[in-house]
Image (cartoon, helix red, strand yellow):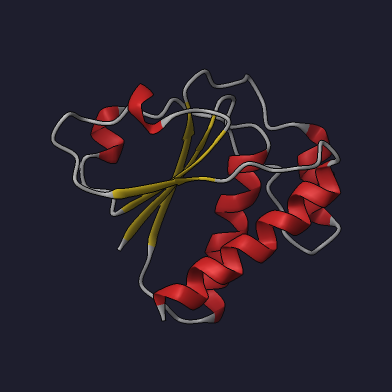
Length: 127
């Protein structure tokens, strides 16, 4: 399975979700390829996101935002978007599934915790 987390800047939410999913797939010993990107990538991952993830033992300080492309998505099974639409970058013939994760809070730690719950539930559903 291949999974993508996409947001606008790829500097906060999608980076945190990707790191949480990587941890989850490792802990569960599952074979899931995980990618991330943004429709309008920022220059750097937000310091607040780095700090929030560091508080739970995940280091994302070496990550860089990147542009998501239709080529990235053509073989993805599932795309999670946060603040953007899959139609902005998906190939016309893409047959995967997608969902929108609207996050209620603007607080970075609350976002991290909500993303953690959603990622865990996503992997529960895969098993």
